Length: 241
Length: 221
Image (cartoon, rainbow over all chains, first blue to last red; front, side, top):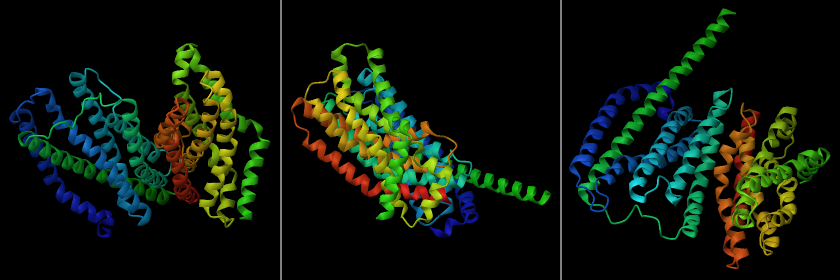
């Protein structure tokens, strides 16, 4: 891991991999969407409405996955002072928030025909909404300081605290939900899913992960460049004096 | 140990001498509470139904809002630098500051909560249930909130950002706090919820000071 602590080395690797990742993401998205929207048979209960799953489920998975990576990055930035881990947080958090938001919105669009309402205070929806707020808090804290390095470290601490707390929140919300709404809520994980419906979902999941990777590489490169420009400006100013 | 007691005494003296500070959380709590009958109507049925939830939500708000200056004020006047060289580990500082803050905010809410039960017209069991559950739950709020307060020491933004960071983390306390009171009042029993709240308290007392201390060291860098 420390091999890639050097931003230059990372940049060379990222530059080389970026076109492949992006191409693969686009190709897999096309395949997955075609499989999900055209090939897969309509659901016997939900008709065609279930097809939003091919966006909804991968985004929800990613929203959780990205928070996990934030926590791992937080550990490596606190323990090893890994410089890229700090930049990673700033690069990945908005993407995670957007995935979380998309999962919520597609869930609401899915919920309208299925449950007859845009929103129910179901355990999953509520946990997802809380996760969204955790993302917002992380990003807001990152940007709340004049000194970006301070913001990065503060955000790392809050990501770590959040990752310890997240399972407890999840457990509490599940418990709260079963207490207040006995099994009246439509269950998303009903019967096991048929292969013809499953494979496009998995392809979409991989496609979105690759897309996320591409976004992170782009944003990390931008952050590194920005840092370089700031440093150059500073040296130019001190040289001018 | 002597340093720890000295710090606790210092914090409490400060809170008592600047008397307004201590009452602020309570006044906010009562003011916000009195807005609800104005908003949802004075009917006792609604107030009794939402009363317990209201007490806990407002407790979250009032504890979080009073935490804002817990460390920022110390950083500004140099107290934090002195604490840094005092030999007292920041983990202890975090724990003691949280204790002092709770004694002057959470405990005040506990003491006045029977009055709130009266105002909301909750059943008579609540006169005991609400203070006891608040007593176990509110220290956890302070301990979690302390992390946020320490993180925001040198930030450009204050209260609302603190709320955004801290409130999601306090949700478990809200859920089990409300459920404990409702279980107690309805006669279903609350021992399970009380034990979970106790577990939250012990867990955060053991872990939160480390996060707070990390944030304080960052603030001194």
